[in-house]
Image (cartoon, rainbow, N blue to C red; front, top):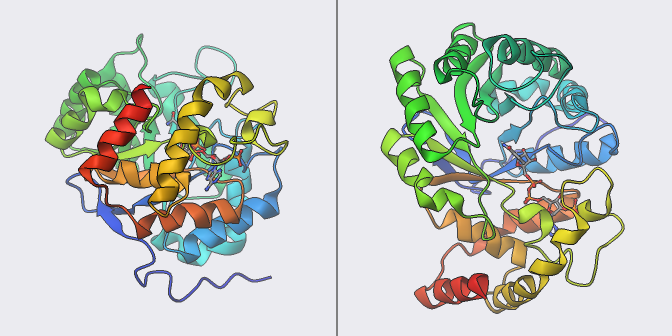
Length: 330
Ligand SMILES: NC(=O)c1ccc[n+]([C@@H]2O[C@H](COP(=O)([O-])OP(=O)(O)OC[C@H]3O[C@@H](n4cnc5c(N)ncnc54)[C@H](OP(=O)(O)O)[C@@H]3O)[C@@H](O)[C@H]2O)c1
């Protein structure tokens, strides 16, 4: 059936935040296609999630060359869905991809060389059927390639028109500062940093958020729900259809048990706030204005709907914040 987006998609359904000091605004919740969109997944399920997202004001979809499995299949599937449903709305969308992790054999199939990054971007565009992506990321820092070479490749991607903006992901604070300086000198400012950030993963608070603010770089927090741990998903065991139960899922069974006591306490608190735990986990990240967007995953429309409703209560009292810290330290 032809897809006609909801006419009310921009009527206050979601808020948008400026990405650093750029001209771009991102929805405060964005959708990632790392899991649930690969060759092993049901295309129509992913299609439903993407449609629901766009209908509710989510204008940003995040991909990477290696998302699947198999690697590349999330971009291929996105390309199929994009052509059927979203082609007329290309200018309403921010689509990102990345290169950094292993994609093809041999010395040029991963990390941060110009050779790898630019070849990978060409492959991603072909898989998705796009002329350009909005954001092209260096997916991880490469200890063996000069930072200048990696940043020059991002700059070239932008100058060639194959990407509109440059981003970095998983770069520590000090390296982010250096990368930002190089990109500025090249004339292509760093738009955004994509780090892992959740109640359970807080390294960004030790310097990266400050650097991002100083440099005018936006921050999009990935795995905000700790891959599903910070939801009600695992409160009563490991459901068969969950990420932790799937052989290709990055969340491993052994990660559940050590966290579950904290999850239960957080879940109780969320209930007292009139929220689901997923909603509280998202709201907790959005309380910091340096966080431009929270980059969630979802395996169903129901999960996405739950997460979008986090916008109904973003405020925390001092007492609530202290109680959360105590639970996280327990
Ligand atoms: N830059 C990087 O290195 C990097 C690395 C990882 C991810 N990312 C990006 O970040 C995106 C999000 O990562 P993520 O998928 O790990 O994010 P996440 O939001 O922490 O976890 C998503 C998973 O949590 C569960 N879930 C979501 N909403 C739920 C709800 N309301 N109730 C119950 N369960 C819920 C689902 O698990 P089930 O599948 O079990 O239902 C879903 O697949 C990725 O798609 C990717 O774009 C980037």
